[in-house]
Image (cartoon, rainbow, N blue to C red; front, side, top):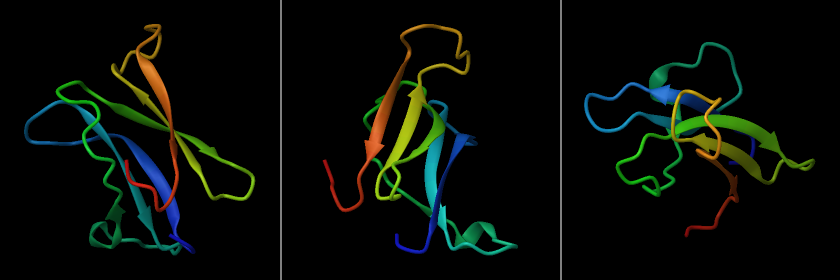
Amino acid sequence: MAGKIAFCDYLKKAAAGPARGVLAYAAPRSGIKENEIGLIDIGDPFGTEAAFFVSLGSNSDHTRLFLGVYATANVTERHRGAVYEIVPGIAI
């Protein structure tokens, strides 16, 4: 992922299934088209639950990303979210 920009989308439209966000990457340039975006597969740790994604940033040398995942679009509900550390090259 060197030289790429990682980002998340709070909610990706899907025809069926639970509401889900998406973690993705692209080359840094203007005019990026949808087919130039790569999705980062994080598996399916949320099962049938909704998962709304929020980027929480990276560490100082940009080798790790932090992703907030919330089970509801209502972020005022307590204890419904989790923070994940995305480490390149490590599959769990």
